[in-house]
Length: 314
Image (cartoon, one colour):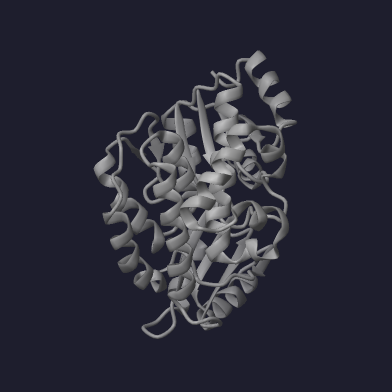
């Protein structure tokens, strides 16, 4: 069985999507569709501008490139995914691929998501850090130890075994990072981010995004999705809005989702669709016996062809 997975913020880079744009009409149409909806030159943003790294721009840019890649992949090859999943922002790409969210609705929503998450906390108040080499429960314990009513930190991303990203008030993040080092973490890396994503500090973004999502007509799933919020399958379109709101203030259960896809649903092949191959690397560490590949440019079709030949995408 095959699951397509879609990357989140952090996978953006200047020049992403250009190879697809140059080689495939359907990719050019996707970029044009996004630009028209946002009244923003997405092509110029992705291909030429360092501003693609700003949260408000990165989110629609990644969605556009991931959707273009998905459309190219499924138009050029007979790919039939059994499940989809996305990392944080990538859930919007996964929902588009699943058929439950129209691309133009998605591009508008993630533009607003970028604006609201950026504005939720004044610059410099929040922070995030990656903790490598400690068990999840030990990281959780450290976060609880340093948190109080005024200074809060919690897990934001359970990316793979021994890799947890924490998020919250900068002072609490710094204290948790110090304790993690003292507890024997292999590395603790303070992240250069604009906001403390996936923490309760994003509450104001939830309130504003509720209005945006209320205006969207979600559709029936053609492909079931495994969600970040609870690492379980969702097939009911009426739950989508709640899960997208919960996602903003809850940790991304990524390695739990991959284990669920593999152990509970029988997925043996994972294909990352979109810029870079960050998720591919994580999945290789989470389920090393599974087959992984990524698709983000024309040359990757050769790998897809080999996978089809070896029946890895079935």
